Amino acid sequence: MTRVYQYIMKKRILVITQCFACGSWLSIEKITNILSDNKHALKILGYGSLHVKRSDQIYSIIPFIAYNRYGYLTCYGPMFVFLWNIPIFIVSLFQILLFRPNVIIYNGFGLGLILSPVSKIFGIKNIIMYHSTIRDVGIKTKNILKKLINYVDMIVVNSEGSRMDIIDVTPNNKIVTNHHFASDIFFNNKKRSPKPHDNLNILYVGRIDKDKLCFPLIDFAKKTKSSNKFHFTFVGAGSEVNHITHLAKIFNNIDYLGYISDTCHLSKLYREADVLWTFADTTYLALPAIEALASGTPIIVPEYAAITGRKEKINRKLVPTEIGWSIDPYNEEKVSQLLERIRSGREYRNKKCKEYAEKFYQLLPYSHWSALFQRNE
Image 1 (tube, rainbow, N blue to C red):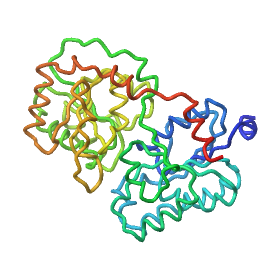
Image 2 (image 1 turned 180 degrees about the horizontal axis):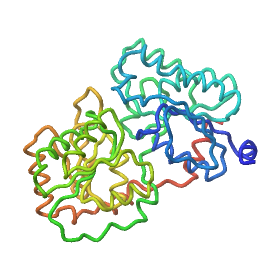
Image 3 (image 1 turned 90 degrees about the vertical axis):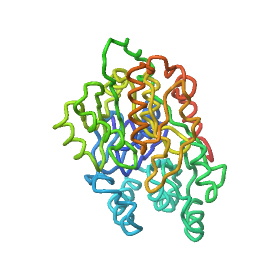
Image 4 (image 1 turned 90 degrees about the horizontal axis):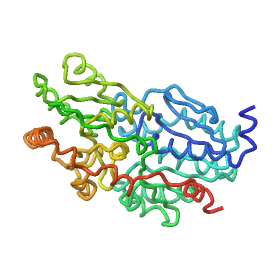
């Protein structure tokens, strides 16, 4: 009965994602939940496994290895990208015919560009959630992208920097900037009252990969294995999970909790941490950073952007002193000095994280998302 009911609701929206255990999906999932709450019919299609499912959404899961489980498969070359997309491309075609969506939301720039010309034949609106970078592609490639983007109705970016990255190939009226935001659950829970303790509880939430710049923290954790001044908790999936799993088994100061999708559990972890070691792109903070701030927990952000193969610095305005610290992760002495200073001086108690998050990172109302789907109609 539920499925029958979904076909007569407002809009039928097909969401296609290449991964579930990734920040890009978590950002999209928040939007899909808002749409479902407002009686749109959603079908979720993607690779891998989904830890939390809603009864009012339909799921079509394709068993497949995580794209970064054995390195960045989609970064090895065009042939790997093509082979990677074959299963989801074929299944997507069937879902377009069976589900007959009014709108398709793509988590994957390449996949969205490939499928959009096909879905346009059926009068479907195409929305790409952009989490890529094309700044280094050549002129010929950009010309091809421009032609394919003609079939795309909207590209949603998460910062002005991402907008500028894609502006050369996309008409400005097709680009919508939607900044990261934290769900209400992170704002609603009060920061725990500090209890007397001598050690600094440092949390990391995100992909366990070198490009996320968590390895300087891991290196520091290994060096302080015999000290009771610091305790480290790691949460997330990624190509280096075996490494952190091994360390958690042999070092008492390291815990690895695996991948956690339960927002209640995450909220509790943020609140109990003294500080979150996190990451950022050049112009925006990662989602875990925003969730931690909403929970009242300050952040430490490496001054280099978490972009594979690059060494670009982030905008320093992303981390004002009222919410945390920015650090050169490759300077071991500075990392050590900062963490020791935070621990001994209890600086984390004086931050205004929740107030900052309430000002800049609160959930937007449904009317905002509804307006996106009314554009170009």
